[in-house]
Length: 291
Image (cartoon, rainbow, N blue to C red; front, side, top):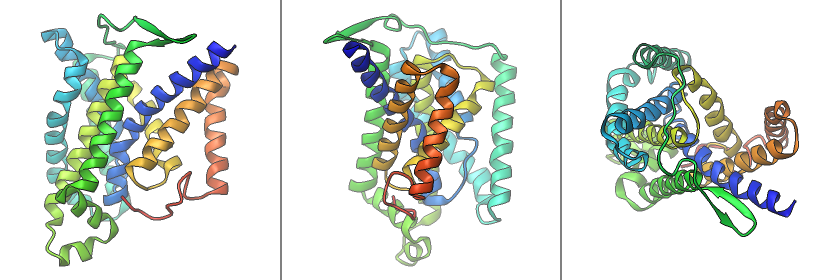
């Protein structure tokens, strides 16, 4: 029993790190820009296929693909912001939501055309290997994916707190008009921010592809999970997203280990509802946007 509990805790923490990585880009974009990026999961799906194609065609390890995904998806996000988001950013929440939903549908259907609806998987030499931590057995691929997710989250936190560009982005999140008055190039920095958000989604897709099968239609599932992390953590800092991801990961693994599978999601969303009723700002004490 003790070995099972320890295994569940370790799996939950590693899964929570990945969930935090899933929600990171969505939290940044929503927290600073107020844009509900429902196409977030579509970019996650593209990240999985990005790693899949590099591995299938060139034998590039998914760990390397995670690093390569950062500049590729940053550029993709910057283009999306300049060509789409700037046209709907100030037209009201409905127009922006419709535009992002249309983008999600477009990416999903292009994915079906290119890769069909069949599920794919990334199978490397370490996919089915494991090691022992005391009485617990842990999969190497989860440790690698969790470690990469933690590195991504740490890099985002350092960027936002210790670079001039990151501090300027945080200032925009606090008061966009005041930031503009102070001489901050809001348009340029929002392009960088949206690019970073999509880059985080692309990397998260690589990490998920290392562990789970993926398909174009399955991307909606990760959209729900990303919103779960963001709503649970509140529109706060990167650290809030990390805490929320760990909470979701722990709850899911414990529920999956000790109750029937069909009740896992019921337990997760019931707890989410209870937390938001008790604390409308989520687990954190932040009731307003503050990056």
